[in-house]
Structure formats: structure tokens, C-alpha cells
Amino acid sequence: MNFALILFVLLVLTGLLWLLDHFISRKKRAPDVPNPWWVEYGASFFPVILAVFFLRSFLVEPYKIPSGSMIPTLLVGDFILVNKFTYGIRLPVINKKVIELNNPKRGDVMVFRYPVDPSLDYIKRVVGLPGDKISYQNKHLKINGKEVGLDKVEPYLGTGLFYTPRYQEQLGEVKHAILLDREADTPIGPITQFQNFDNCHYNADGVDCVVPPGHYFMMGDNRDNSQDSRYWGFVPDENIVGKAFFVWFNFSDLKRIGAFK
Image (cartoon, rainbow, N blue to C red; front, side):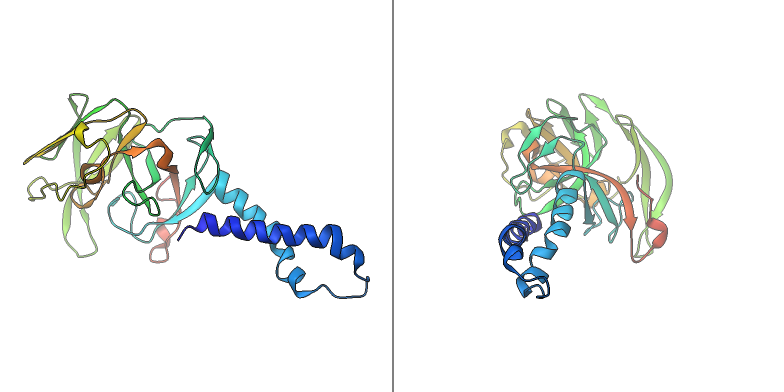
């Protein structure tokens, strides 16, 4: 469901009713006559919808984490806020960038439209920038020929009461935790035939890719349980929604508030 489109349609309809009432109908209505139903339930909602539309389109937008691909950084059920302007101002609904600001940085947690089905929003971490050479072989990540070092920390206790190895990883200026079991057999597959597929080479041990201009290579922090750029390719700039920056609620665990920022 395209909520932005629905909100835009409601904005246009209530706006037209508000204009009709403000400039025409109200002048013909006697002072002691109550407002008609279309004013009470239409035009009166216009200011509220306008404020929500502006806030959601240009400033921040709330999202709910639906899967465990970003564990341990983000958990299922986390409600997060996404900065809509940090990567540039985009027109709502069509998502076309009209003002250039910042580019995504390695290590950012980014929300984007799923390249395979743009009606879906995904959230992953930026690993590869345009022009980067990304190698993920035998569960070792290399960026431009240099392996990304991992520091092992205490294991992560999942909801099924089993432990998963946890590491500290640094991408750019961002230090974060990932889950990765190098002893588990988790081959990459099945692979989607994506745009710029020729930029990647797959083998039994993993994948090597060169990130095309204007695209990004995304990975989940739950490395063995994330469908990401290893499977469906690169995220083009026009699919970017914004940068995730804050957990504002989780019904199952109130301690999650502010856990990611």
C-alpha cells in the first residue's frame, strides 16, 4: 500500500473542500447555520493532513521493523524514525530528488525502496559506495581489497534461547555489532537476476561485486539471516527513502526506546 500516495490524494481532496468553503460556501452561509457535513468531515481535516504530509514527506517518517535482518542493531517490533532530508530533498510520491545535500556514508542504516519491488521498503546498512569493490568470501568482508576487521564480543541470546556469535565491526566512522556464525553453512542463494548483474561474480564461497555509479551495496547486520545486496543487487540513488536514526518505541520492550541513535 502506497501510504504517501493515499495521503497526497486526501490532501488534494480536503484542500479543494477547504478552498470551496473558505472562498465561496462560507460567504453564502448565514452565521447561525451549522457547518455542512462536508466541512465538518472534509475541509476541517485539511490543516491536519497538510501538517502530517509535510512532516512525513520532508522531515521524518516512522517505520516499524518487520524482520530480524538487522539484529542486534534493530529488533523485530522496533518503531524507528527516518530522516527524510539528510540525503537530499525529494518530491513526495514520485521520490524525485530536487535538492542535493549529503550522500550516504559507509555504515549508515538506510531505508530504501526494494529494487525488486519498489512498493516495499527495506532497511539495511550501507556497506559499499559507488565504485567500491566488495568481496564477501567465506564470510569475510573486504572493501577495496582490505578486510574489515571484527572484534569478538559476548554472544547474542536470541528469542529462541540460543546463542549466536556477535562481533564489533567498523564501517567508516560507524562502529556497530553484527551477528555472524562462521561455523554455520549458509551459502548465498537463490540469486535474483538484477540490474548490473554483470558487476558481480558468484562462486561457491561467496560473491565479488563492483558497485556501479549512483548505486549502493547494502547488507543486514544479521549476516547469516539477511536478504540483501548479495542476493538481489544494488540500490540505486532514486530508491533511497532516508537515514534511520532513532528507536522511539517497542511494545514488547520499553527499554528499546533510544537504543539506536
